[in-house]
Image 1 (cartoon, rainbow, N blue to C red):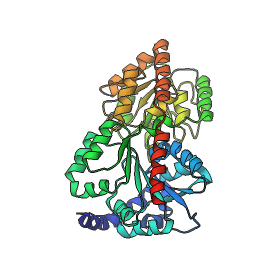
Image 2 (image 1 turned 45 degrees about the horizontal axis):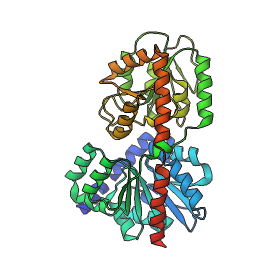
Image 3 (image 1 turned 30 degrees about the vertical axis):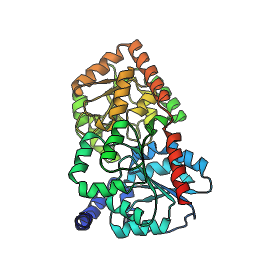
Length: 408
């Protein structure tokens, strides 16, 4: 089965390269370091290296507590972070600067993965959340590299997909040295697929500390705006149309922050101002475009209510924990299966509300804007929830220590 998978992947590589070039029109980083996507690298690398793969922005941010913990516990090791997207690469550089090496992970071809592993020679591999690539894990096993699936999640929907391709998925999952699952449900689904040494360690995203400078700047910005602010956070294709059409008239400013930078110009048609051109919106502006990356703490601190994108179409939702940690009352849509446990906890704690559709979400946002006490209760509940669920980093670090000890 893996041979057939590899053959199909080889056939689509030319189309993937065309897509890279096309996306590079809006995001130039896609046209850089293309050789890395086939396992060709240059430059110095340390003799002792820990490797973390964070496919894109969300995973790069979620990895931050673990990266800091690994750097503190293994100071004689360098840290390599790989990604797949241009936004992920930019986020890694923004978050970690020169403290880590950064590279693209190759496409999942055997020779590219082999070149990657032979060039960097990591002592431990850490894959964030759901990055289960068959040839990558086969090559890691061949090279004797222990691989940890960190902050692992597997929704019921995804598990059904993996079961349909069991002949391909089971060997990949079985090649993992250990799994740190977010919840007991995630752990059970991964064990069913053949994972070994599965522990429930919690969600690293609860350990992510919002940037204090961004929080302070967001509060100052909100005071300067001097009217209620509703944040549409990490919206995906089509959601802006639904949410903005359902927005109730009034004094409130709606700040839209699309999930992907390539959509900024597309979403700008709704806005009367955008952050990179006019940082402070005009008093008559109804919609302000947040066209910057890496400032979600700012936006969450600047709002009175946060509506979480990716949840009004069957896309699994986006990270609501960032908003909770910043003290923003949260509203999510019906499709939060990628953050099912965090959503359940937030609703139970009184920190979030779930709407059946975009219309109800904007109706509830308007209701919260009119209820200072309800917003204050939700804000406090969100901060308390995040504080109560911290600790995943220490549990992940313990697993990393054990895996590294086995390799000595």
